[in-house]
Image 1 (cartoon, rainbow, N blue to C red):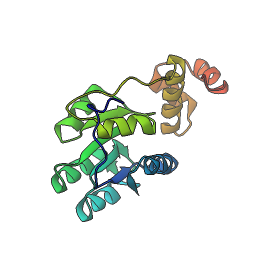
Image 2: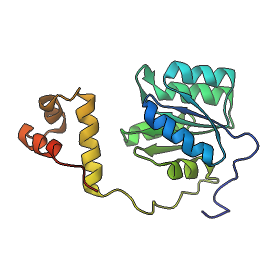
Image 3: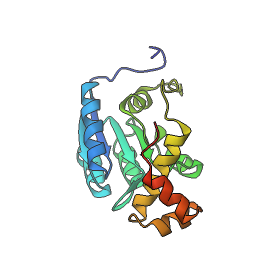
Image 4: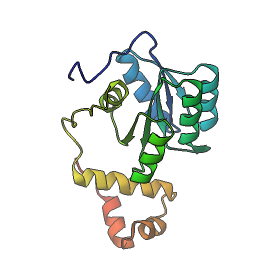
Amino acid sequence: MNENSFAAIGEDNSLVICDDDEPFARRLARAMEKRGFAPEIALSVAEGRSIARERPPAYAVVDLRLEDGNGLEVVEELRAARPDSRIIVLTGYGAIATAVAAVKIGATDYLSKPADADDVEAALLSVGGQKPPPPENPMSADRVRWEHIQRVFELCDRNVSETARRLNMHRRTLQRILAKRSPK
């Protein structure tokens, strides 16, 4: 990382990770702790808003879609409680409209899942509108496609017919894809 394009963590290293995927949130919290942050996990919009009101953090990573609502509610609460906080919106449903909405209400940046701790740290510490460098080993297009299919399959409660309909693909084609191992 270029020293001019990234800030130091600073004295206030408080970080809230608001994501309803508990294993992911815990892994990210451990990784960010190793990088010098003091993470706290919120698994819902209600928990995220409560932390924002009671002890607003200097940094935040907020998932866009949470089981009990929209992560943008947490972003608004954080921005109101602490205008100088650096907030990253993280989601598996990347779309230009949601990215624009997140930035308009105060998010510093917007990352699509799967983002690793290096991506999150770079986004949290970037200054002056500088963009972090591209990832060293990005996922292959086949892997991104497979991840998307798996995510939609899970959202459809593992219903093959419904998943195939939503992905606009033939049910048998989807079954063949699901039967294979994940690409590298």
